[in-house]
Image (cartoon, rainbow, N blue to C red; front, side):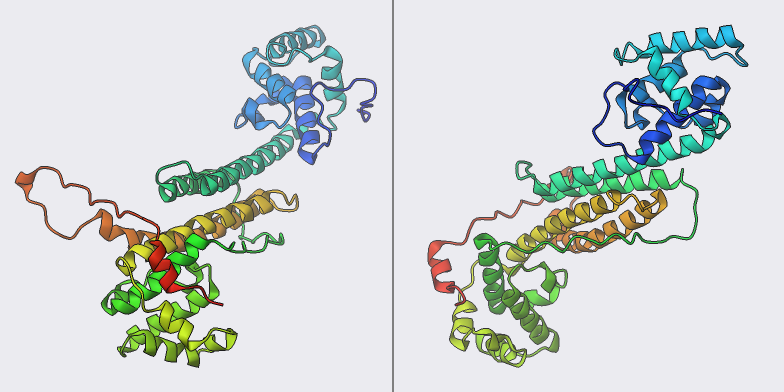
Length: 379
């Protein structure tokens, strides 16, 4: 019966500082294949990059390259091991014959190669989901691209496609969500630009009440300032009820909703809602776009937390990842509703006029100093 290997005698090349459980599954699988090359058919779905250990991946790729004997006799078995070692050394020069023997001794049962291969696939799936989540987080924080929402949504689509691909290869069973404690929602930083945009939106909405009914794609949770979120609820409620909409009526509605109890005076609200610039849709798009980027970053952190919990199975990672992306999709749809009129004008285009021209992009200049001074800041 194979004995447990003594790693002090022969340390494998590129040894990691901390070994995860999948590391031992990789050793067991490689040992099984070195002993019984005919079991390579049970690992057809694997590639060299599915292994977390670079030397293991090079060794497995060498096995797929070298012609394996069907039922090796002892001399043929030695020839097989030597051929695999020489092929693998092209990618991993530090591999030694002693380490191949260590892998063989690390395999409890060669006939369980199929189970070991499934473990390696699960470890690769976990790492690949984590890489896609990290790419989504990087896209959400990348300020160098010209169109950040499109860049972020492309990363989200790539993650969703990868989850769908994994779902077709993972055995299905009743879905269970991961029980991993989620990271807290991101706390909105004190952003002067975001606060100015939200205040200008409120003032513009009060001066153009007809636009409020068409801005149902803007939600209170999109705001970074709780006071502005509450005031937007006041504006939306008055517009929905068909009541007069001006700075005084909004102030009166805010009083009934308890907003004046937070240290904000009635005079502050009247001044805040009395200065408008640009249509309210312009400011609303800026707000929902910022909310989309923030939700994408939080979604990436949520999925990364799932992958870092070893108790989650691959099926739970897929289920939890899809649920997290569904929350991002909700904000995505509202952002699409906000920007669709800009990208798809309703005016018909004549067939003789050539291809339809793209609608001009709305410029996003910062609020003028005079307007910001007039709007004031909430004490």
